[in-house]
Image 1: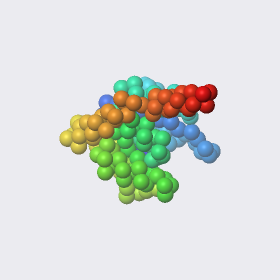
Image 2: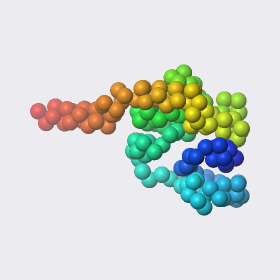
Image 3: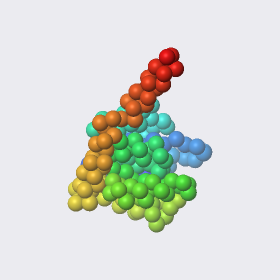
Image 4: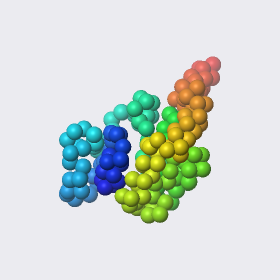
Amino acid sequence: MANAVKILLENSKVQVLWKFNKRHEFTDQFLDILDEAIKSGRVRMSKWIKVDPAALLETGNVIVSVHHGGANCFHEAIGTGIPQVVLPVWVDLYDFAIRVQYLGVGIWGSRNAAPNWTAAELSSALLKVVGDSDKAISMRKRALEISKPYQKAPGRIIAAHELAKWARLASA
């Protein structure tokens, strides 16, 4: 992953926010290639992102969501109009990797190496989404287009209305 991020940084002007929760004991030596980018703030790593992911996506500062293909990640990116790179690792997550490509809102970032990934394959996917190619522009436009109905009536608003309706019924 660090090699893919390095290739992305060398070929774009993006900044990377990387949620990285170490679950096993190993050295941080793999990050040596990103040392300069981490020191300059171009790469920021966090064990956990305290902000609600959807709120982060809504800031307008996120240009791609890279995730494992879970339903929450997929729908948060769809609802906010953010293109996606999906790296599925379990059988139930491949559907969303295929779905982002079918919808034209992203790329399955590890199609050849899944459930793992290679730096070449992942960096290629990232650059296809964040670049200025016709495909990248098309993905961004399509992601925004698909998000419009969700932005008119976000799920949290609909849920609040439904809860209020049920509360009124229960008190009647």
